[in-house]
Image (cartoon, rainbow, N blue to C red; front, side, top):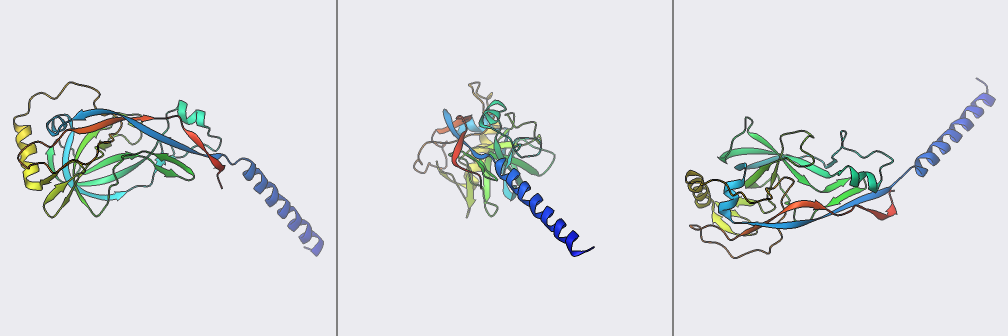
Length: 247
């Protein structure tokens, strides 16, 4: 191959690279941001024990990256706000929870998959106030609800938790609402379940996820139910685009 042919090949390669870069740049879309709010439904501890599908103690093994509620976890390159709204697309993340004790309910596997909404996928984001921030180095007591919401068909079998989980440290179970000696809380739950009357029939039963909005309350006595806890079903405002384009 002579020098002239080499020069021609290099020139065509440069032109191809510039045209490809220009095409990609022109097809970049602006980032999409979803914000959420909640409507309130109040439950006390007894009611919460009655309606929860699972009540478990354990630890998180890992927290998976956030993804969109599409087949491949991503938005198409030409996605718009209208598409996200019409298809009720969400950003969520799953976590694997290793159960060490079942207080209510049971599943075949000792690992339960828990789904939370919000997070970031690329430049797109979903902001959900009140979502719990689980940690892999923390033991929890969780009230869980089977997922029957808009993402139920994506990797079926997940659960949602309340936004005020009990963190267990040094024999105490602490949430933003109250504090118990762990043994006392477990004993209270078990006693409530052994004498449980039919579950409350009020609605709505959580189907998407729960958000708590009340401020922390004083520590509750360990022999009596905790103060009322406020829950909220998931709802979403119209998605909005960010001002600056995606890099």
